[in-house]
View 1 (cartoon, rainbow, N blue to C red):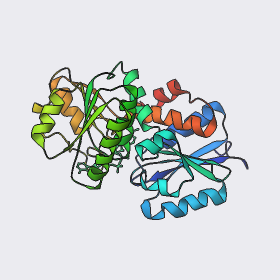
View 2 (cartoon, protein in one colour):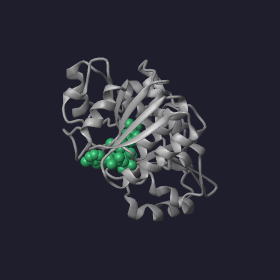
View 3 (cartoon, rainbow, N blue to C red):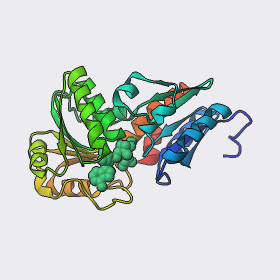
Length: 287
Ligand code: NAD
């Protein structure tokens, strides 16, 4: 690593908390090394309180960019100069690029998720899907799925600030795309059962299943699943969440969050460097 750092090395950061579990530093640093690019990627434990100051520092120091993760993805928009069309629609940002002091926010989670499904040979276009969550990751997935041609999306969230935000998401999807979206309370288990039963895939896009909620699942028990249903989790640490374990037991095809992580990262990499990430090499390394 010391051989790689020069007077011209550019810094890419990851801003979120908790952060120490992230595979992004490994993924991007390996890709920089393989392509001989003069960048380094570091994770910073940054919550919402420090976010504004950190981004002022980005401008002052000319830092090239960052990924943004929980809990900063929505709030960070307030401190940026511009948003990509997808980030504007999703109301969330996971990638920032600094061009001469102008900070532009992008969202690559939605395209990353859809690409990850495609790589698994899963086609949900024209079908109905059910998703738990209405935060940054869930919103990005819903928007991209709707734009790509998913027919119907049933969104479940607990009654928190994200639920209120999801009302606008549903309005936007119904007004701006051909997809029909509906919002439900995650506590409404009868509806959860019915919507999963009429969907091709159930997606957990909440933080349930990762630290500190390891061993928990948004779906109460396996009676909500059937063989043939696809069950997917955006969580990738642990690689097999309680939800995926339950689904596997019933014979469902399962997909964890590693593929989404890889493909959202590949897009962000391209935004910062203008180069394509060597995805096959990186996949072999992190999977
Ligand atoms: P966020 O803070 O924007 O949203 C959190 C969501 O989880 C909200 O919908 C919230 O209501 C829900 N939630 C939190 N605690 C809950 C609980 N106890 N019960 C029910 N619902 C609960 O976060 P985010 O950025 O959307 O991230 C959500 C998850 O997605 C995290 O686990 C994150 O690691 C993961 N993620 C994975 C990838 C990937 O590439 N695989 C990308 C982005 C996010």
